[in-house]
Length: 116
Image 1: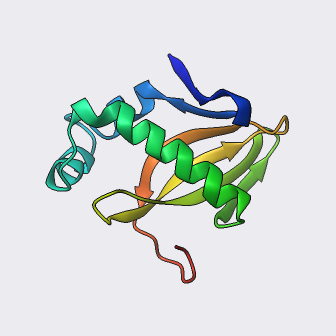
Image 2: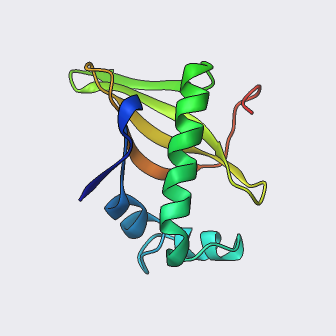
């Protein structure tokens, strides 16, 4: 199910994405990581809202890293900082129509300078 969080800004985040990637038993350690940061599956909606808010702000400020470009769109790594101070990048797809959709909630630690 695709959940459109910020309708007027064309930013999309699939609730299924965060449930399967961050809070699934087979999430390659991401579930445990988020739990050590103080987040559980009950925080899903709050996390989605925060991801979308920061994705919009960072995208509009040019605070992102360009990734692969193909016929489907431009992939972006957008930094996210949670309210506990933990920062990482999140994968997004910018489609030709201007829609921004999350593809990977947790893409790894930020490894580049001048981000956030």
